[in-house]
Length: 244
Length: 59
Image 1 (cartoon, rainbow over the protein chains, first blue to last red):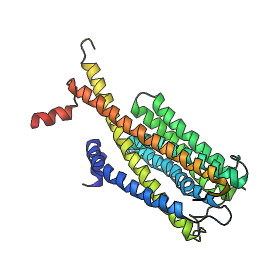
Image 2 (spheres, one colour):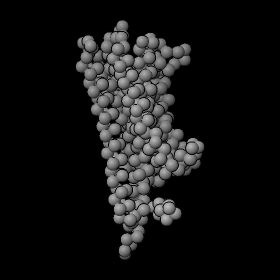
Image 3 (cartoon, rainbow over the protein chains, first blue to last red):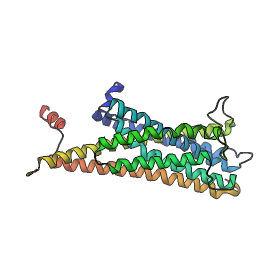
Image 4 (tube, helix red, strand yellow):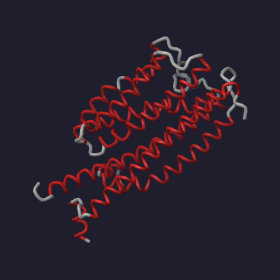
């Protein structure tokens, strides 16, 4: 099957039916490997065992940003190319991205208390991630507020593209401003500064979280296509009803 | 396993992540069942898409 064939919702549904069980299996295996490595990872010489929070905090932070980047690409698909699945992809990614952002905020707060002495501080990194979470909630609310999915999709696409300005702010906030949050230590010029015994479990968990995101996103897209079919059929039923 | 003096923070962080992920999976699974149920209910009442009617006639 050519990639362009997936632009057809029916073919996309067939594709998800075939792929989802394999992705779900790979996700379970990924988490089994990642969690066992995280369990056996050594303590950090300064942070002790709290470094284990990093194995869920950092992947969820990456996916929080990945979710919005994916929605931004889909928003372009909605506004420029009017791709039939672009709006479905954007709408389905919003609650998943919001969930990963919430995990990032909660785990970061729980990591901050023993290491920084506070659950929260209004520094640029923490605040910009909180703004990302609120923007996710805004997009979800917008989709629910407008009944026509096409109109809701266009309005949400504009909001998503405007909100994409927050992604570089999150990434470079630790360089542009003096923050309590540490600077980049994995994805940075000059290579990672994390020791391999901690870096390897972190990357394994990142792969597992990414597989989970992709699996849930495909499943949510499948649900959204079915929801739109139900809506179309109900409209057809209402139009064909006697007296309509 | 000894998680040191901050064990509670680590355990709560992992528990919170697990609860959010399980809730997300459950919501998506329940939504799928609900949409399938709605679709089969409509089809049982004879409400189908034109493309499906055409494919049934062809076969």
